[in-house]
Length: 322
Image 1 (tube, rainbow, N blue to C red):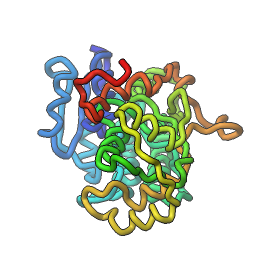
Image 2 (image 1 turned 30 degrees about the vertical axis):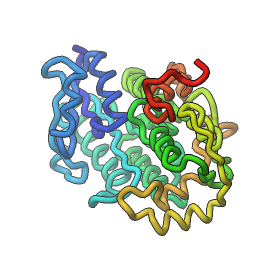
Image 3 (image 1 turned 60 degrees about the vertical axis):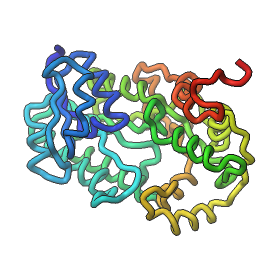
């Protein structure tokens, strides 16, 4: 096995399990602190016997965090939530939690620290999610100046929360589908395997110390483009009805508090802002996937494989026109 122990906070989530699998294949010994280890047993098959260890921990608890980073050479923080609830807030998870992990890592003598944030992190954003991500970056930088910060765009891959969500909504609303803000918001989806490769490069390449990288795929799409793509893959032809953003805000304000609401008010605010890698003068401040030596994977090569279940003719039928 490779020398060293890596502690991966958030390792049981969608992005985390891909990172754990990649690092296990590289031979690292891995700890995964999680609130409910019994729900993360699927990670054990990613490595050899004894290579991956689960441990109970809450990132709001200083003792738990200190125990999780003790003796680790590398710490990776992936903890993130898309909506508040269950006693978890953006501030606790993205800002103060990240700061606590970074401070404990510095105190424990951790050699490398990787903070996975998000494109759009901005202390002046209207979105509490984006503000908390920016605050988390600031706390990490203050506690661990040599940390590498990675900001992915929307991440796609088997088990993501974006493409299947809209495919399911499109299945429910078969004839008319709302196109909020005329669908002009831009996105640059990045493959989860490429994010895992970027994390690996961040921990082995000393040139990444203290730097920030924004991770986007090979192409930029409007929201309308992505919905049209989903409709094509799932063999649906809905009429996309343009809806102004203020109506999305109203709907989210009225229903966003429900457990299974399609969108919260905070998410509605995020939908107004482009989610792409910085360009122009701003690009000099951040690196990209290419700077990490990772070739970006096109969503067209991956997403259809797991949207088959949402096709009108079912996942086992031959695609129309095949």
